[in-house]
Image 1 (tube, protein in one colour):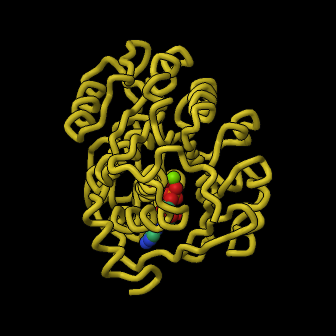
Image 2 (cartoon, rainbow, N blue to C red; image 1 turned 90 degrees about the vertical axis):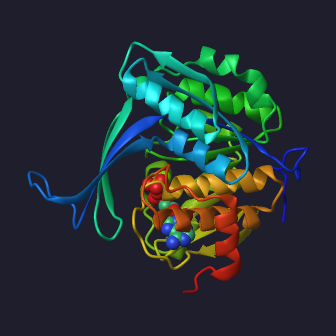
Image 3 (cartoon, rainbow, N blue to C red; image 1 turned 180 degrees about the vertical axis):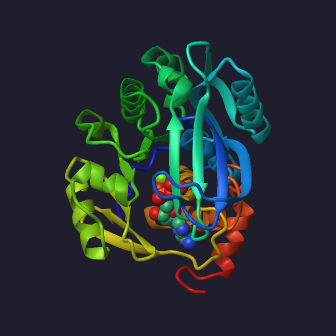
Length: 323
Ligand SMILES: Nc1ncnc2c1ncn2[C@@H]1O[C@H](COP(=O)(O)OP(=O)(O)O)[C@@H](O)[C@H]1O
Ligand SMILES: [Mg+2]
């Protein structure tokens, strides 16, 4: 398998991952089912905790063994302070997170049903204020990284600049394409690997994923944008990895769903850490898959992120796709 996206100094003990992404506070209500428009449903439990795809992936990558720097923004409010403190306690470097008085900290309201299906409303808030200048200030950190991990919670100019700097420095650039947006064509030339869920893949490719065949078709369309690899769900409890005319299926682990929030973030974190360590795409995908499976067995987008030891244990004891 080609490993062209691997950085020059792979196979090191501690990979360096830089995440440019959203930092939010999540309010999660766990209930039996999701409401219809205009309806009120009773929830069983309220969880208030840190979230945002960027922060989730940063914490996930650190727990899986990477040195992690997060670039982002929080509001100059009590929430922002608490979010920064939480990230610091987790071991994530937040020296490139700005604090803005222009907006409140990013906030997400999440409803989760008993099957793990969810509905989310968010206020972008401070995340909107991440600038190109801020990214340039973090240039040395970006260029020294093994992997740069991006999502769409940050303004496009900042994402583009970070991807460009990283790509030119030989850093592997991974885009986790949430929340769903239409095609930012100009970004593609500096992305190596795209990971998207079905909604995101449809927004980007215009193709609906229903099964393995349609996932392959959407993946092939996205690969043509110059990407080296694409990872999409099949909607049949597996993910499909496509690269260079090759492909692999990652069957999901059979685990009990407690809270699916952040599963995709755990996957992205595992993929980033694995590739940063110099693992093959398939091995890194398996690490991501194990991290995602463990995440959904535990509550909280960040609190539920597994450690490397836990993913190791799952990979040894529970065969992927087995029960
Ligand atoms: N049981 C499981 N085993 C392996 N991977 C899983 C499992 N459940 C979920 N995943 C992973 O999590 C991903 C969900 O991603 P996504 O829909 O983006 O979630 P999120 O909204 O948390 O980002 C799946 O595509 C898959 O890669
Ligand atoms: Mg996702």
